[in-house]
Amino acid sequence: MPRDNRLSRSLHALIHLDRHVKRATSDAMAKMLGTNPVVVRRMMSGLREKGYLVSEKGHGGGWELRADLHDITLLDVYQAIGSPALFSIGPAADPSPCLVEHAVDARLDQALGEAEALLLQRFSQITVADIADDYLQKMASLGLDPHTFPRCSD
Image (tube, rainbow, N blue to C red; front, top):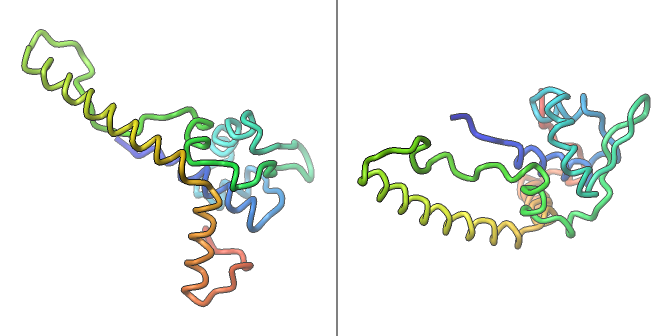
């Protein structure tokens, strides 16, 4: 099962819009993220609906940040992209008459539910600004100017 990287890509895009470019087209974002513009538009639309971004069509248009990164948590972004499944493991998809499978599925459901609740609670404590600050510290530790545009794509 391929990984769902929409959360990572959305966070990446938000930080770029805050730190490096005022406005970016779907094409430019797609190049930076290594995907295609349709994927970017789908991914960013949830962030627009929540009021974190605005978009303008046509020449000179693009995506623009409308919220402070301190006001956006990982949970906010996760919910804006549609709250995808957090884990690729889980109970059997098809109903089974087997009582062993019932017991396994019940315990897996319980454990995964508890893990998901903890993870989402942690997501609510981390802002996108926290991640952007991590990036700035990484740039400084490498002796790089934090105001330069990082190379994210070829």
